[in-house]
Image (tube, rainbow, N blue to C red; front, side, top):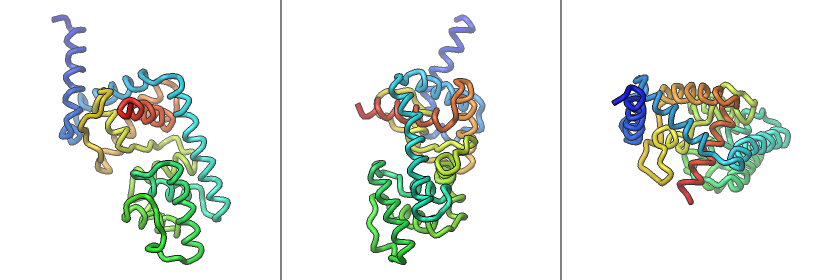
Length: 224
């Protein structure tokens, strides 16, 4: 076996291993992270022109909405984006926006949280209310929520919003649904974020546009 062929076989084996959720525990392993970066490149190259356009447009629209909330409710764009992010799990984007407005309106009017209906988990609703009230510590305790707040609220390109779709893309190049680890620790998050930014830089795009493009691409394939 030639060294070139051996390297290719090694990458394929690593990709198979990464799709095993237990491999997420091994992010200190250089080979594991190298394989994950390779998977991200594969998904980027898989993206169509329309999917790449969607990756650019999505954050522009989200930033515009966060700015709208900021002005309407007299809060920082970071707080506005934090509320949007806290309400996002298992929530469609259009409903996510409706829920964000409802939370800010309730906080300003002094309406109790239990009287407000949102389409996400109760723990996330509680988090959204705390952020809307200005509790910045709640915002910073959650890496994903904070990264989204920085991306959307402050256009900060030093952060990447890593959700379950990004985690899936890191672990597998399968175009069909496959069991993957869908959460990570704060330490793992930082490592994954660093790797995403590195790969994005290779293609000359910001981390959040890279992430949104991959999010769109893998989601489209798995839900086809």
